Image 1 (cartoon, helix red, strand yellow):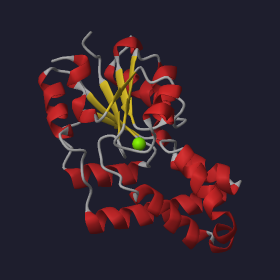
Image 2 (cartoon, rainbow, N blue to C red):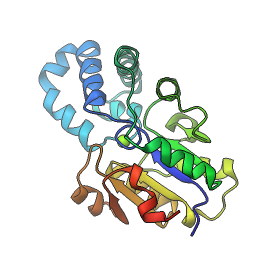
Image 3 (cartoon, rainbow, N blue to C red):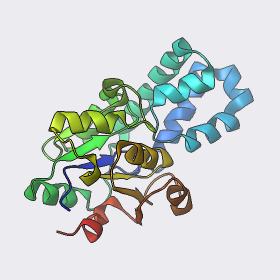
Image 4 (cartoon, protein in one colour):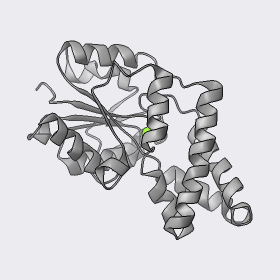
Length: 223
Ligand SMILES: [Mg+2]
């Protein structure tokens, strides 16, 4: 069935990550909370990896126990990540632009969802030169709850006027992406192996198929 739209995650799915997100977390913790970071470092990083794909501000709130502290940490995270993109740029997953173009040619909207804030996401889209390649992008702050909740996908469906969620295709590199896609009601929720979690982890979350890369999408949906 032709997808009503295809929703891609960003870091680890359409944009290479290579540990930059983890590094930005480390910088944020060590700068904003140097003492607690010394004590809880490994425990915090384990949680960050486990919850990768979720809203960053929610992850910080869970770890630090207060919204005010989380906002402070998130600002440090965004600064660190922004510096990284400004210094080293951002790299897309090889071949993903061709997939975006093919979807456009087939009149299938391209949607990005993320755990980043709008400011960070816009910086990434700008760095990758993707403004003309995507139809819509949604951040947790705009939608309500981040992943594993389906709010970002629900908002995208609403904005695109899509009532039948089953035909939407969702792709992501984390268990949270998969859970969000299933909660949204998509029949095709694909895990990719270019990011954070393993095929076993993605399958255990209910991924309907595993692809090596989002660039291989057409091997599953046809063209
Ligand atoms: Mg990701």
